[in-house]
Length: 398
Image (cartoon, rainbow, N blue to C red):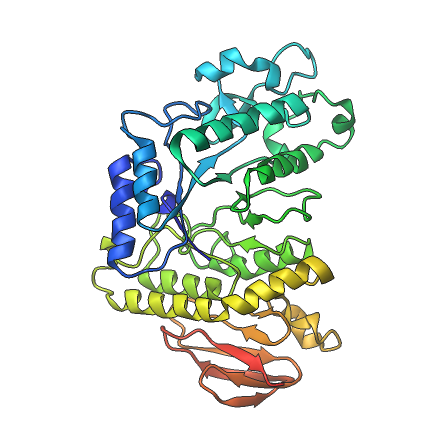
């Protein structure tokens, strides 16, 4: 599946016309798309849950036009209600209360609000109120589904109490209840939080990544994070946006390409930064490489879907470490820049700036590389050549 998001490209600077133009750009460049996500700053106040009329003169018409162009449309949302929203004053009965005074709303801070409430998902009526608001905007505008952000217990601090006293004993359950509530909004759901929610058939997104190469929340963390999700039973991994979120620095053309290649054989691709950005005007080859990687993703999509279906029956993840099928090979336990898709497809992307070769370890078996050459396993392929347009992958011969 190929997602598009407004976030890394526009951050909060979105309007109805910019979103329509973005969709037209994607189509004009002959790029496939299954879903377009409208991210932050579509409201005036956080918690309003209706479009800012100054930015979106006719949101339902916009979404209808996007549908006509072949896009499904999702909308970014969250579990907070900021104090400056009229919704706050009218609905405090649905918010988490203070432990020191359970008649007062517990105030929290989050990245878009210094004074905000948090919906109490331990309360059935609050959950239904939240869902009814989502259902209202879906009916009014025609939006298909939602991207659900936040939900972590850490936002709540210490002075809180839930309406369900049992949840106070295991407070992380509030994240589970949030994810379960979100999952009721259909089959195109994305969350970034999980606690005992592996049973939900929804995408779980990695936290925002920074647009850099290293282990400091950059490209090198992508594979370890995906495998950690898989170990924990969250198989439907959404690696967030290709190239990172462009916080502070914009990804170079090479970083964008290598980031895309790491994502290519994972379950989903999510673009926001696009290969025809003005920053890449001198790197026209980036568009051709992007199309090549999307085609490779589409080629293996039936296999990924089959593994996803199997995971719900067997518990085996879609993405696996090298030791999964070769646990007696000690060499496989220290490799964090390769991964398996199922048992028979090994992926070894480049995660270092400027590299045109890399060492690749192959577990036991006979493997055919993406050039059609066969290699015996149990060995390290030293200095395997990798041009910028190449993603090394190997299929185990049957």
